[in-house]
Image (tube, rainbow, N blue to C red; front, top):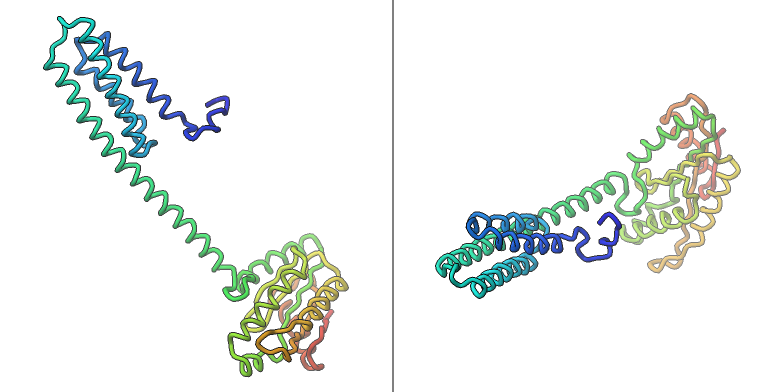
Length: 297
């Protein structure tokens, strides 16, 4: 075990090997303590207890069979070696007692092993459920992007970092143009397809360090940490062009676009103030005909 070689085996803890060694040594001890054999049989049970939490029922039956084989071999050897000292009733009595208790160990060991398996499965199920709940808490079901609540939490963190380190930070609010008409003309399922398509394109187009989230309905937000105004605007323009080139099976004639408002974080302002300025820039883009990016200093 210390050398690490046991890690290559199916039983890295060497439970079976240790139990087999203990059973053999116990059998040798019983040979030299014939007068105390009834009490010394309990050493077998100590060895079986060693594996009751580690072995399944099949392997426990194998170890019980090995124990019974060793004890039977000892009795046969002593009968043949010193028949005058052997008391047949004692031999049979000891054998039956050992066999019955070994059967009890097999039953209890199997029960404990099954109980451990159920507890392990329940723990895995709880861990999976916890993971799913965590994902639900921060992710939007439809697009898989971060949701509004998680974005606002991250926004506060990024504002603190930008304020402390005096690093640039840009926020963009994106609104899909004429999205209500898509739902009205083609159905909500088609609208969901447009939202999912935008989320997929945006996730692939933006940097991994950029924070993309669904803000609500057909609105999305992007946070550009450690980026210049030119780089942020170029990323949005690239995304706008890619989104406008999309084709949809449910409506080949459909042309999708978005409007975006981009603004820079000013030291000392709150998340609400920054968001309002980005929202003002968005409405400026809409008022000028949509399908464009508007900036506020």
